[in-house]
Length: 330
Figure (cartoon, rainbow, N blue to C red):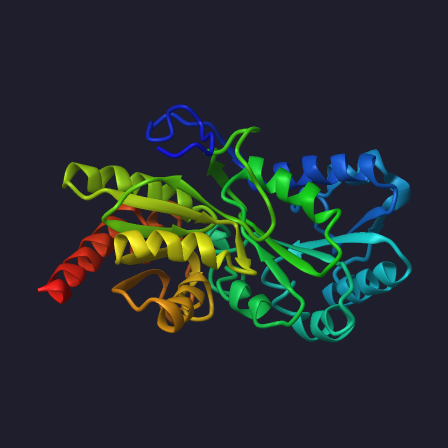
């Protein structure tokens, strides 16, 4: 293991779980206590996004805009222009899915410190199917100048990220899953915007993961160890700006890479790592994620199996990357 202070039995089968929105809600309330300029708004999904705790604690600083996501972010830009620190939350399918143009023109062009929180992202909104399963948000937000993109791995990190974002003076997007997420970090696990962390040390292959896929990647590393492959697992909580130094230092050691994300690999974490490696350190790369397809209705476990996002699939990709590396060395 590394020294990042994960939960004691991170490879166990009986870890605690919690929905990420609770961590966001706790962090938002704490940020509100620390800074009277923190305000929050919702598009008729106050409970679903975890904003209800802030609305109860600071009703005078909460705004309900109704089902109007474009107004939500535009109003956030106005609040930021007046010196406030706004957090605006909605389902990711609608923010940034519906209001990307408003985010670009009112927030990013003006570099306003609006914090956009997209919930129910990835496959976590499993029963609602393709229309609500936001798989493209990382790509949509990463392409915007001035935008920072945060993807926490659990509710504990979501809380820390929210508190950190409350003092961050630029636009930012944080994606939050809908269903229960395994808790793998602790109060002592470090978090810093723009920093990636080595969660597990290894020398044979680097697994670069984000969001809920970080836990699956740790499970994959445990499987690989049984095959004599020592995987290094890097958790990328900030996809933009990317922590190039931490990633390249690991790849220099392992010379083989797997990326893992619950999103489209094109334009997502996989795309960002592919660009980084092509420009700096070309090595075998296998990308695990959604590969140019839409979601569908189902249970989360079944969908993760269908789209190849399980620890077994990540381990298989690692085997291929290592085999490709070995062939290249001959």
